Amino acid sequence: MQQPNQDWLARSRRAVWHPCTQMKKHEQLPIVPIARGEGAWLVDFEGRRFLDGVSSWWVNLFGHANPRINAALVDQMNTLEHVILAGFTQKPVVELSEQLGELTGLGHAFYGSDGASATEIALKMSYHYWRNHGQDSKTGFVSLQNSYHGETLGALSVTDVPLFSATYAPLLRQTHRVMSPDWRLAEPGENAEAYARRAADSLEALFKTHAADLAAFIVEPLCQGAAGMAMYHPAYLHRARALCNEYKVHLIADEIAVGFGRTGTLFACEQADIKPDFICLSKGITGGYLPLSAVLTTDEIYAAFYADDVSLGFLHSHSYTGNALACRAALEVLQIFKDNDVLATNRQKATTVAPDFAHLTAHPRVKNARQLGMIWAFDVIDTKIGFAGRLFEAALARGVLLRPINNTIYLMPPYVVTAAELKQVFNTLLALLDEGLS
Ligand SMILES: *Cc1c(COP(=O)(O)O)cnc(C)c1O
Image 1 (cartoon, protein in one colour):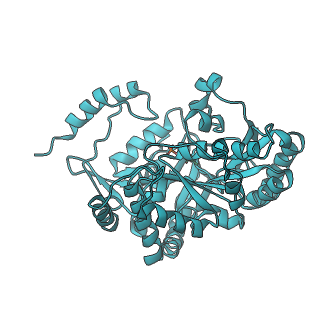
Image 2: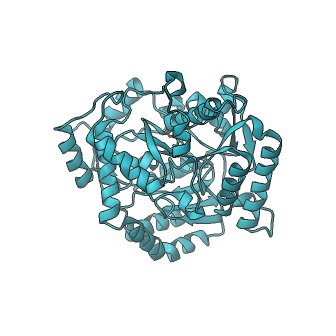
Image 3: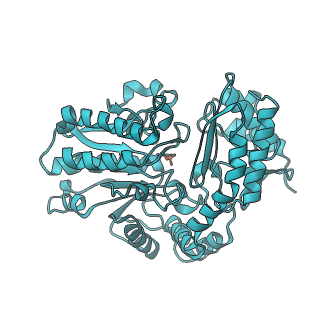
């Protein structure tokens, strides 16, 4: 017999330290116990269903308990679950590395377990590259205002979300911040592209004075997720690529959240027609099944580490580097993209629901409506402190899992969501705004 919700809730509060959470909050706010998942839906122990509007923290692509990924994993489990990747190799890691190489135009896939470890790997590789070239002074990093690249100490140093980083400031490296191209910050009358170009000018100003001390510029292409789905014009990336070339600073594309079709193309960088020096991948890479991240880079950077001297090599590792099960899940994800023409289907779905989204965002309390690929977002005006929590609870009570970021409401569903389900979410949100939730 299944235990009711209540048991799991109390036991979780006692035994589990939940992420990104002030635990005391759960004296009032219930933790939601999930018994199982089914496509875009999560189901609790009492049979209540919630549409997973945040793809379980931006990781799920093809639904919960996906039959194809399940079958691939069962097969892999019965063959080889994991083997040390130093000195050994296996089929899933080789095939995945080859395919990611083809898809990104980069290569030499280096694996970690989480997004933050991919950020660490890219930062270390960039610095080490310059060092191997005798340019020891290039130790600095640049990131955007309101950037998010993960929460380990190195990654947090290039993250600009004070709620997450301010407490740890004494432990973090000083890094440079440049103007965000987020079009919501444009001057009245200035369009997104003009604003993006102005933001790029400020990057150039920093490069002019500091390039000799800079290893890399790290950026979330097209959409700064944790900033509240802050979207920007691809002209910024195009210009940033040119500036990084001119001033000899690496460009690290953090596609951890936006990769694998989220912005409408397989990788967001494609929309700016640029190739970064490093690409960081994670989250959707395994369809939301298993922790896996990868960093791919250029032949030229790889070559700087290739030598008789051991210390010139990249001696970084994680125990689960290149885990066979995770790589196999990722291979199945790539196969689903091919077999189901996922990008075209998503485009079609977004077009179908566009009038419904426009209807929702015509509400007088909505501003800055934006949509990119499978991300819908808008900001709500006239909100009071604690709005995000209240909206979370109200939406959950109506069967939708949403986690607003401050006064930004966003929807980032698994790609298996239907147009009817999307419309249902928009209607729910419209009802909540009409009821005056603030
Ligand atoms: C989530 C995220 C990370 C960190 O990934 P984790 O797996 O949570 O460590 C890094 N960069 C971006 C853009 C992200 O959205």
